Amino acid sequence: MSRQPIVQEKRFWLSILFLGLLFQILASLLMPIGLDAHVHATYVSDEIADGEASLDWGKLRVDGANQSVAEEIPADDKWFVWHSILEVWFRIFGVSLFSLHAFGLVLGLSALAVAYISTKSLWGPDNALTLTALLSIYSPLLRSNGRMYQESIVIMLATIIIYSIIKILRRENQKFWHLTCLLALAMILSIKGLPPKYAIYLYLPILSLEFYRPSLKPLKIPILIALTTVATCVLVWLRLDEIPIEVIQILPITILIAGVIYLYIGGLLFAADSRQSNFESNFLQLLSQIVLAVLCGYIVMLFLVEMKTLDSTREIVQQRFRYIYRYVTVLIVPLWWSQMAKQKEPALKVINNKNKILIALVITLMLIINCYILTIDRGIEELGQEINEDIVDGENILYIADAPLAMHRLYTLQITIDPNHDRNITGFWADESINWSSVLSENNISWVIITDDTPIYLDDDWSKFNTDTDHLVYHLN
Image (cartoon, rainbow, N blue to C red):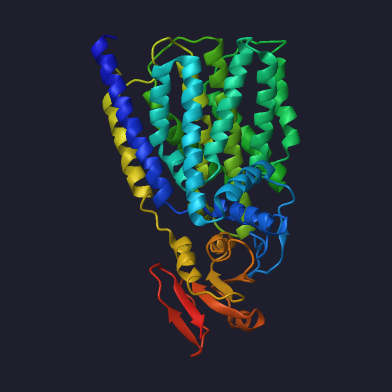
């Protein structure tokens, strides 16, 4: 490649990186914090308040009930690593909505920094720049960063794991990288709410590389699809003790969205067309394929669990939980690294890429999507800020909504109206399909929040509260 195209290539990716960083900042300022993030913030703020991480307003999953029961639900040391990191942040910067938004930005920028530093160390500064620039505008990751989901820290730790494995393969300071790899595996499991002890089982194949390095080849597409199907059936059977017929419908959609759209079109479409391969590139690609198969099976299993828990249809569940395909973003870095390992030249390029028109269209589409997701309504998060100005200590809230994610949304109020858990405020939920008038008197309700069409069981003692959100809100006079 001549000098001029190299300069043009670098300027192009620097421009993309600048836009990406701008999007990261705007996402942290404008997007609502995610429901799961609010729940974890509630656990941690409660632990800071009374020494025990718990949810005070009842279970997240109502399991077919039509109203909630206000009871304490302890975390039982699940998500220990995630909660510990969040607790340190809260103790330094305070428990607030602004603090959560700032934390999401720090996590997102940290993930980009780790990706850049590790890629530069392994594959050079040109590859590091292009990869980091593309990560910065990668829409699923931007959305996760803006909503303070766990994808950023998981990608950070996964990058450290893969980096450690490559160092082990290259026989560089192996003891240190073995320990780093095992520790990062345990941290990821804890962050996802799984027992960290299982990290030892995931680590054993990595340890075996010290003794045996088989000749590995990436899986052909038909074999990869077969492996994904088997992994899906195993995970679904272990969780549900059956394999519902809906697997036939959900699995192909999951493969299409997660494998083709999120990973290939969102990433590998940019890779240089190289037919070269070596042990490292084959290993990284095969590892990514195996993890993709397991993640697709896990996503399908989650859809089926939600269908059973909520007694709902496939269409409704896939619509409600459509963003869980983002779990495959953890594979973005190792898949790109598998391409970088093939050649000395930059693996990601635009100027001399035969697909540059298509690449330009994909980048433009991602930028448009990014602009769109910045306009997501802050909804009940904004409502919590409005109510906080008027709610009095000891006044309870009744939230009327359909069951899926209703309790998650109810907990989005807590960090704005009772961040220190000292105002004696309790939130209750009731399904919109029932007569919830009895809940008012039984639980000393002073505020009613209604999301959808439902009969209004309120008398003249209640007045409408003005809000800039789409909710109907009433306050007891």
